[in-house]
Length: 262
Length: 282
Image (cartoon, rainbow over all chains, first blue to last red):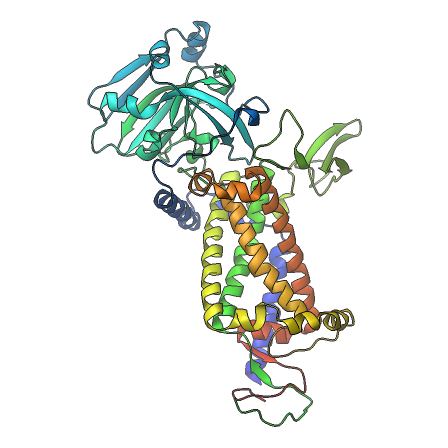
């Protein structure tokens, strides 16, 4: 009999505790927002699992769906920075991006750089794809540019390079101690993917400033924050910890998953 | 399985009704769904609108739900638009909290994890519990197929369909039969959850992943686009919340102590007159 009462008391107290959990709202889980919290660190391992499973499941060359021209029903919605105010970018914009150069550096055989005219003379790829924002919305648009893979081959990626870091003119966050510049990174699978292009055209027009002029990288099997706008330098590295807060991108530094394929 | 006398006593026999697989997966799901719901609402708050189609209409209309706040002469108000009909939802949706310091989120902070806007954290927690949820579904299906739980208790038999009207009347008059297996309405409810709602919410969740859309492009075809999948994901969430409410009400109505005991220890007090079998306790 005593066992029964114990169990009954247990049930009663768990019911009280359970209802308290709901009534008090969810502020008691706010600690999960603390990026140094060990519980959060354990939970973030789920993103590593997602990355590894998706890399196994999705062929390295498998394309993201491409849509027909009739499915472009609106302009590409700009998000994040829409007009960077760094002096370098303002100057380039005033010069109609004439002095712009895209540089490939880091763990490469030879550092190379290209003007916008040179990029436009390289093999062209156009693709009508769906842009998925981490916020939840999607937008279909036609992106035109040149594939990144052959350009990386021109620079000669060294065997121990593992990531591309994408440096941008975009001062996405302005703080008292100076501007924080947007950057992103990807593995070499995404960098060499056939749909990964340095895009300079959007919906058959020159890429507008709001969407990342003069050059925006497209990584079509990932969310919008993995598609850096206002790109100027691609750096081959074997470790991401030296950049920003070490998570591999501006948004990953804010607590978003680095892979961005989900 | 020797049936002893069907002697009717004041108390029915204590039967071992829920296997350890059923009990453990039940409580793991309860925890998972709690976090998945509250982080899901956090994620929804980042773009509180639902659309039909591949994409979100910004220059044309394909939204079926929009939650937001507007400025009026009398100050800001929360409003919700469903299928073109707009409702004032101040205090609950679009605008909530203290009148002098309102917060302008679609769902109020009391229903989200964290309790403030933090999409990145919401996603971390959502995907963590999403993995556990899916793994537990897999374990449940294998275990319940092997131990006969699916065949015995979940899939409705022709006799269950025949007994459905009677079961509806019994439920409406709060006369519950506590047998070895589930009644027709119970079977239908659990069958819908396991074979319709759980697969739907997992697959529509995967359809929102651009990586999975490349791997399994048929996901986009069966759901009619990523944005439709997101809408279905939300609707299935509402159906699971409805299931949860009915589930709790039925547990309370049918005898919370007995029901909770069976989901904790496996032992369940059957109705008087239930034929006893070997292994039952008095």
